[in-house]
Length: 600
Image 1: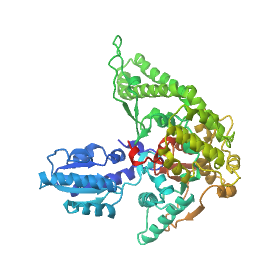
Image 2: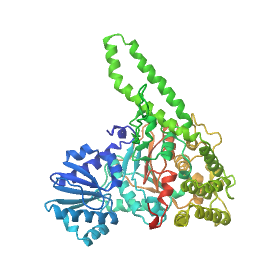
Image 3: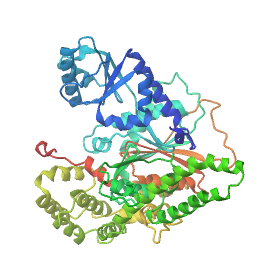
Image 4: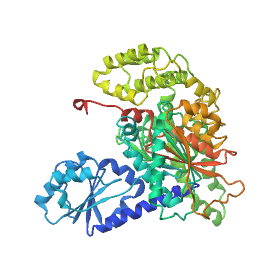
């Protein structure tokens, strides 16, 4: 199932296996038949670690979603709640337990907090009078979840909001803990670089935790050479831009959740000849997306304009392979053809799926609306008229286009201009509130606090200097055969990835001035390795860097890092980790606030 996790430079299956082992141990603590009551948000991340079959082996007979009222009936001895440590969930659990206690006195209740136990939650259960009903109260430390052979995510959706709006550093503590778990499995990381306030906090926590465990020396040969911690607010521009890679566009248009995408079913209906197409499926088509699928691994990081050619090339190869059957004469040749058949059929169905997805995306990317939106984004990125009210944004508000679209563009203009002139800022604010409703005042305040949409305080706009020094805009980016990371946005090179690229070579000293213009400190730390664990590097062996994005990373940035890993002369391979996989829409949504009455 998880073979694709072990193909890369770093075998991430080790991390998955460690997580599975802990889950088994906890389940075995609760002897007898079990029902699990899930906090719905956890089912996606857990699916990456353990399928139902593993739970079944440990006597899990039923699974329910946590909701208020009575639990569905189940003839089991143990009821286990798998929940995040949130107070509102404790009230629901209390309600569930009360309704059960009246019916079945012989049941055992257990609670498993993910990723940490919480005194506050236990206190709430105590106030509700149910704390004593629980036999086991435990924590399941699921910090970093392997999503692919080079990708880890904590799927901590509120991390950016907590850090920049609420001044809550819980997610940073979880990050530091996750990195300690990683070092316990893959060896101490000798070099740590970072940029940003949150990066500094995480590094400090890691070094403190290391001192606290000073007695237990880690005797594993280090797999990672370097850790780079990057704050999301060092580069606020990149997630706001529309991603133009295949995977990025799937996420922008349909949303990828825990490695799955739900697509409109019409394109995937198998129509038989002569049949009327009135019985089209209504259930969304759910597809898993990861590098275990050969074709997807090949096209996911390409600019969308290069995907069509790749698909038709693949189609020719597959039909040629099927034609081979006519040439199979001897028994041996026929046998060989038959043995390859399952693989060929899987390749054919994979091709059919991705051709359908590409058609769906093409309908959108060739539309006038998409082109107009992209043109405005690219004007902002290149510094065209960022200091005055944009007519396209004005028209979009007048037409009452989706608010998220407006917010992405306005924030982008603000970021590319180091804040908007007070007059422009007030105008946008007024137009948005009058068109979409005054309840969005809270959202606009949040965006301002996070630095995404703000009035200009100093007259100096550093963005053009940063753009020129770091070559963030490349004219004539080659989308078909890229030679630079800017292909992922058809011209714009993500700032976060440029910083990563420069760190590898020639080093951050060469861009000291630009680093000072970006928010937060930049730093370098070294962790001592026990003697004998220093790597002897073979001739031509690549170094491995773990890049950790605090506050979220987009698929286009991941594609750019994979591109750097594959470059002949880079000498560096990248593994990517993040608090959350994001795109501009999910990111802005996490910062939106609705007064209670407005909550759907």
